[in-house]
Amino acid sequence: MSYQLPVDIGRKLAAWTEADYGHLGELHPLSPNTRLTLQRLSLAFLERVLPEAAAVQLVPDQPLQWLVGGQPVQLSEEEVLALRLPRQVQGRIKNIGQPLRPKPAAWEHWLTLAPLQLRVWSMAWLHRLEQAIRDGQRQVNVKLQEDNPLPLLALWDSLELLAAVKRLYTLPWDIPKIRVQLPDEDERCQAAVSAYLGQGLGHPGRTPLLPLNFAQIDRADAAIGSVDWLEEGDPHWPEEDVFAAALQLQRRLDLSFQEYQVASAEREVLDFIFARFFAYTRLRDEQYAAIQRTLTGDGLLVLLPTGYGKSVIYQMVGLLQPGVALIVSPLNALIKDQIAHLRQDGIIGAGFVVGSGAQATREYEFFEEGRYRLFYCSPERFETTLFKRSVARLIERHRIALVAVDEAHCVSEWGHDFRPAYLHIKNMRKLLQRDTGRPIPLLALTATASPVVRADIQRALGIPDTNVIQSRSSDRPELSFSVHKADGRRGRQARLRALDEVFSKVAPTLFGEDVLHARNEDGIYRNGAIVFTPYADRRDEAPFRQWYLGSA
Image (cartoon, rainbow, N blue to C red; front, top):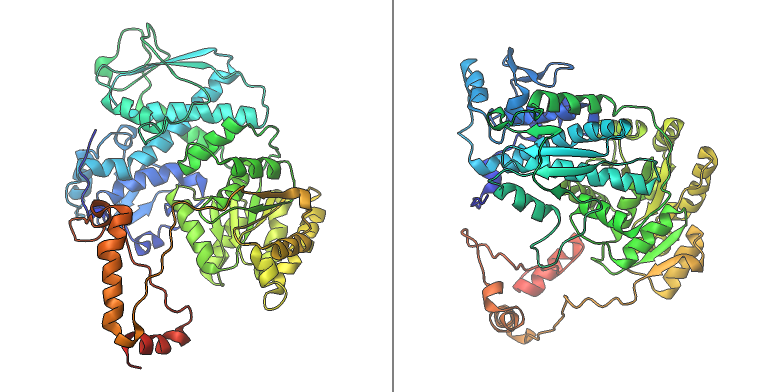
């Protein structure tokens, strides 16, 4: 399974725009409304057929039925779980007079529809495995009739997820053993298993929490794939039953909030959760220690170098504990960057409020309903009447899992003068604990803290000396610094010559000329860029231009 992806992949995919999704409301791919998961899958099929969404309307409570240009379009379960976009769908759209996209390339399916299909398979497997646990089934035998990696990946991920939940919350489950018979042609399945375990990336990968036993099976409990290869006595699991199982699980996702607590935070379980959501095979020791202690309710100060993965600590805690984790961040740009990275990882249960208006109203509604596991805001937001009201509504039905202060050095450096709201976080946490009747961990994280600043953070947030985690070394061997002189008396040309020497002689020696100068088909450097920040304030632009260009 190997495809040559085009350089202009974004233009080739031509996804619908924000304006296209505007009239579709909570069907937006990044909406945290879990009640519409299956509708989003069938909508994605329409997106690969129609160049724009203006003609599309949802039919309530019918995940496979749509109105396109006022005409009903019915999709089948077999179509939405197919490994390629079925031509019949395109034909139906064409017959009602709607314009079509160009015929999609084979690779488009794996980047657009396959991730959503994997979600459906996962929901179906969770439903089926739950039933097997309830029935006391000790072993489940599965035959894959076709080289389709999606049901295999979904099965293994669901199995490990159940194992992780069992161990995190010490649940009395007996999870059945799974035996899988692969098809004779299994190139896709084998490649998918290697990728799932993180193998072939320069390291050995990870050890699964629960293994799958790959073996020949006499009789299956579920045979998946074409009925043409079905062996006598093997019960077929057809696409309509798979979709129905996923739909049953979706309908249960709106159950009222139930209290639970992490009881055991074992290293290999946290490593699995880390790999599942963030695509790294293993937590760093300091990350694991901080997550483990925060899960026990400790207030904690974490001092780790830039790029060490501090944000993962509170993100993991927010995903594991019930309720909503409140993340205090100093700048809107940092909040938006964090949200963008989470969404790139496929985590849509994170929200934020910047300013007011329609976006803020919608975000507050999701927040109050407990649809977010992570919610970002500035420290000043805690002091607004609207936010206090939203928090009060949230804790009526849910709970606050954590208060995290990102870039915690701002507590000391800014809290004493122009951002005093930072100094109120300690009391705000006490009030939340009083109103909820539960302890709420407080986690402060920074890469920049002198001993004086560190002591000030601890005093302002009420964190004792025994509750500090710090890396043994702040050394960053992947970073290097060098200073190169240019004769300022010779003007701009001298500076350009100094830059030319850095790029043509110094940098190639450090990084290798092939690596540094490699370009893509558009002539853009693959592995390097110039980040040039001569001034931080626009008011400094004129002096800089005078210095650099020799004119005001």
